Image (cartoon, rainbow, N blue to C red; front, side, top):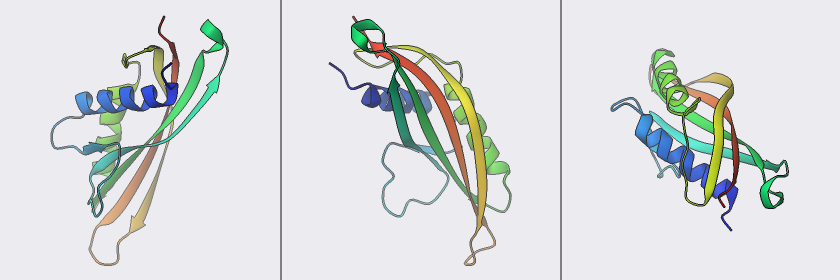
Length: 136
């Protein structure tokens, strides 16, 4: 049987890669050391069994962390808009799993001043809800 959490991560990653416009941000499952913004990484994944086929019908939440460094928050908004467009109400696909939908839940953003430059490093966190169950 497939691990639903792994399928959610893989399907989310594939959708982000396919939907991220060139030049907006890099997409990672695991960020290489000393990577400078702009990039997106899959963060926390929570799953809960709601019952269903073979006793498994999963409601998952996936966090997407968006990083941008620049003089204004507009660059972060561009990244977050691209993530939203790539995931919200978009079909997801992974072997061994049937997805019932992906829905945006909430966002938060936070600036972190960088005393070494004139830029500010911004972090945007986005949460999405995903329904999934094992394929027959």
